[in-house]
Amino acid sequence: MVAITATTQLASQLAMSRNISLLTTMLNQQNQQLASGLKLDGLIGVSSQAQELGTLKSKLGTLETYNSGVQTAINRTDLYALSIEKIIDLATDAQSMMIQNRDTAFAATSAPAVQASTLLDQIGSILQTKDGDRYLFSASNYGDNPLNGALSAIPTAYAAGAVPGVTPGYDDPLQVVTSAIPLNQPPYLNTAAADVQNFYDIGEVGLYVDDKEKVSYGVSAAESGFQRVIDAVVRFRDATADLGTDDVNYQTRVDDAIKQLNTAISELKGIASRNGYKQQQLTEVQERHLRSKDLLTIRIGNIQNADTAAVSTSIANLQTALEASYLVTSKTLALSLVNYL
Image 1 (cartoon, rainbow, N blue to C red):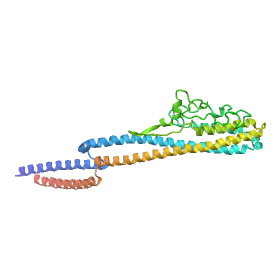
Image 2 (image 1 turned 90 degrees about the vertical axis):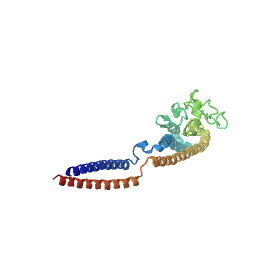
Image 3 (image 1 turned 180 degrees about the vertical axis):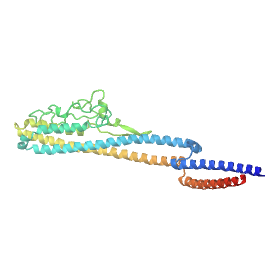
Image 4 (image 1 turned 135 degrees about the vertical axis):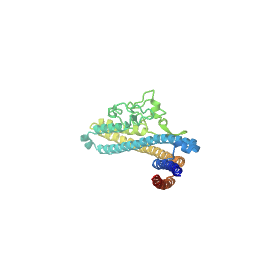
């Protein structure tokens, strides 16, 4: 009888041991889900929706790639905005400088030609702004510096004694270029014959923000606003050749430079406005991407994420069951010892 009782108790103990082992494994699995936030066994745990999950993750990865490109473009349009604003500030400084130096007595001691050269080089420095190894103002030809030499080195374009409205060519801006007229560009623009079209064609600068949607952005150093402000400062610089020899004509030429500068400032504000539109457009695309990303993340989460509340409840139940199993096992072992004795 004792032998039969001992055998029965041994079987019971083995069963309890297996039960404790199973409960411990289940508890560990539930803790793993709680720690990772994901259902068990990866795709195996969501086998019925594995294909959908893979498709959603692929879409999310593609969207993140597009969004990364959009963010880069936004950063560049921000740099354009800052650069254009600086050039407008310099144009405003040039305006004040020209008005002051219209007074020949003031100009005689203020070295206006030197001031003009300094302004030209400051404008040139901004037009050579880079984003990494990319020249921002070189349109789609962004690997090349948009300028060919310092702007202060521009040779005399309006000779001494030239009279606005009389001297041929004086009333035309300094070789302002457009995409329709790619020849005779100013010598300080780095536009070789092979890449001249790329230099002007801002529409070629852009990125795909979706599989079938492309957004163009960018500002070229060849745009007339930049060329006109440079031309206005050159007109003023060259006018100083008449200072002290023909003061009346000097003042007439300064007035002409100021007139050109006023037009240039208006055009620069137009460039800033167009860039601002691109900033807004890119920001709207980014917001659209982020909304889509949120929706994809939610859909992915609905498939693969563990139910935290359910897991927590399961853990509590398993812990209770495990404690009960240990208690029963302990009592069983105590009874076995009594029987043995």
